[in-house]
Image 1 (tube, one colour):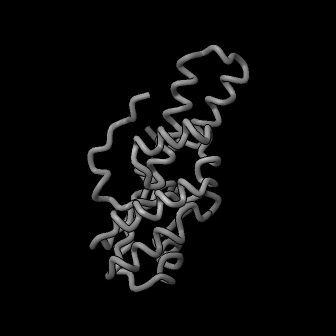
Image 2 (image 1 turned 30 degrees about the horizontal axis):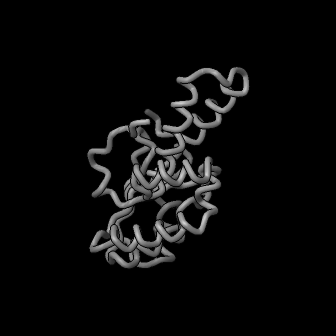
Amino acid sequence: MLQQYKEAEEEMEQVLKLDQHINEASSKLVTCRILQLMDMGFKEEQSKLLLEKFNTVEGVLNSSEAKALKQTSLQEQSGSCCSLWVGNITVEVTEKDLWDLFKTFGEIESVRVLHQRFCAFVNFKNANTAARALEKLQGVELRSTKLVMRYPDRWIQRTLPST
């Protein structure tokens, strides 16, 4: 519920090191990995297929196949969307931090931080600027946490993946 999928993944890996026969932990581990990839812009089915092939999130992200899918996905999603949802926002991250990080890509209309939801919204004046920022800043570390980003429109009614 906190959308801390990487941390949950690490915990499930620890459980499985202690007892590799715990089916619920195996299932939750896969779900954590799928959700991490979905947070990075991959579709659920793409995430499942890539994980079957490369086993780990890191393996997927290092694959040329995933990079090609990601680029195609970014081009399809961007359209005319000027807003970005930014996740993994901790209480240490301020509007100014985000403004300073994102302003290098172009003119920003507004930044809104929602600490209680561990996220923020960055609204650019130009959709191309938002797309460039999304591509270049995905996974960037800010105040000891790696940011995850996506376009907000297509994630309004996301459900947990079936495993």
